Image (cartoon, rainbow over all chains, first blue to last red; front, side, top):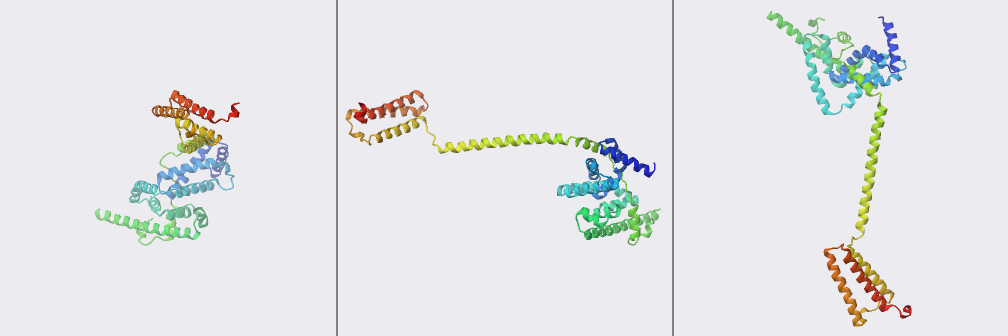
Length: 198
Length: 173
């Protein structure tokens, strides 16, 4: 299936879904949910929360689908909804108790990622270190470096100054570079030890 | 990427390459569609649910309002009742009798009863004593209707006697 035919198919699903066709909406979900989940997971740094928020994103998309006029790409509109829902979730999560439990869950969920790091999976390593960034730095980094938003847009979405968005990105980048370097040194030492043992 | 080259801080270009190599899709570990489908079907009937809850809320509100008003009235009634001294039937009859007697004597120019003939004074004293005895009996049984009627009868006899004693002669004619 070519890109244009997928685009045409998607357009039909959108029209049908706007008329209340759940099966058409499911097709839209199947086409986009992995990207939306990746965005939610990287912004929230927690698997189960990302699953919940991802579901909420699609529920809201279903409810607001009638307002989608096709002025932008559906994927762009969908991502903007996903970012808004995720940021709203983070704003609402002010309760310290929730944060404590969220942190605990995070520690449990990252076990698998740590194993992947030891297996020298570079992409998993970077995702793991992104998840360990401070919340604001992490969100700015995900939106700027991975999702491709401009600092002006990020500042507007997060209700912060443009300069703050830039400084948070710089902070995130420095932390990630430092952690990656430490991880590489660790891997190098491990390899040397293995060679000496052999 | 050869890890031996990264002994120094990662260059911006190398870092950007790493970031761009991140997958733009991640598969969630569980099927999210089921939850979405349930939520979508649930949100199809928000107006019914909202009306249902609104009806309940309105009913509860009205019930609370009515009970509050009722309590308010009762409490006000209680306050009003508290303002009126609560009398026993004996006290009510006695107070009423005293008012009527004073009113009657006032209408006759407040005559001195001690100046009445002794026989009449004795009759009045006997009526007073009868009233005292009846009142004593009513202390033990305050709602005894026969005793109350008897008390009222003695009071009426006293008032009749006073009325007969001091009524102007020309009115008798």
